[in-house]
Image (tube, rainbow, N blue to C red; front, side, top):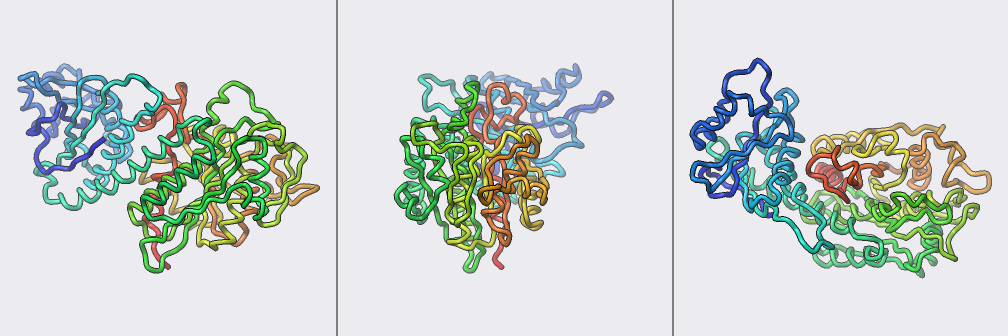
Length: 509
């Protein structure tokens, strides 16, 4: 998807489709909206006629198409819903609905009329960014294995018009930044959508090396031999049942500030999760190729961070393994020793994500002593039960970090909800025969006991945030209809926009 910003009025362009937003009308509203007067003039009164007949309601997801008198172009009005509930997320969703609605309808180019979207309380900068997000992400489809495809919008132009022409330089800069971020999301989705026979731990290491070469990042890959030397017993145990050995992958972005902070971003990369010896049910097991979403999000975050030159130094760590019940697989009852010397009693081999992250967190804290650590993991089904499949769970030991992530969440539309972590949860993960256990006999508070387990490896003195993205990491045929239009069936790359926006806000000490 190519995005362009132009000063001229959208209605004077030669695009296949001109897109404007329209607010939902109340039952008593009879006055024709002034915001649609230019569109109505171009259509010689057709919009006003539809308004008078109450055919045009402006409800969210509503798309109303008008053909110009010459028959060569179309004007599409997209419903924005109630004016009092308007925000940037509405713009993001509306623009995605447009590009999806135009799929297969001979609309290669689209002109987006900014004045109809940059309406209080959504400023022009926020509207431009939301339009970029919605069009780029809404147009994305995973087509690698498709033999035929339908035509999508290939180019979208955001037209400033007379109302915003004086802001051209700033809005072009905003669009450029958001395009880079949206492109990183699409790239991340492509990798996360790959099946397990392709996206092995070795393949993810190759992707990291290629990214490092493109952007000048230092990349270090620890193979199974090196992991054994490092005594990374957690990641080795989880990967022991697979023919594809595990990898610990580290990417380093030096930072855009001269004396910036160091932020570590750590991701769970289970390239396929069968549950191991504690085998999962067959139903929906094919979705477990998405259990690598946290680690792949780290790749996307590093790409975006380096491209946008965020202020802090960023260390990305990907803990990658395939969890299979092979002859060498780890077993319930095993005790494994991790990088920092702590031991784990394995109660359930399907609680493997926290086991690989134990080595990754221990390593990055010891090696880099970061100011902050953020981990992303499709960690628990309990997160989905608690918060649904659109909102990630946040557990954080520091209010400033938590508030920064919550602010980034509000700006990007990637929802998170802060959850408590108490001594109750910490007690539950203590083991009788080891330092901690990876599962408990209780079926309650699973998201929080998993977080308590991770906290023990991040360390009490580390400023740390945990994002359980099990629900929002991907969508299915059944869950897709409840999601915004810019999420498609498959990987969402949740966390890339959220964490990158947070990193953009981090200043040097």
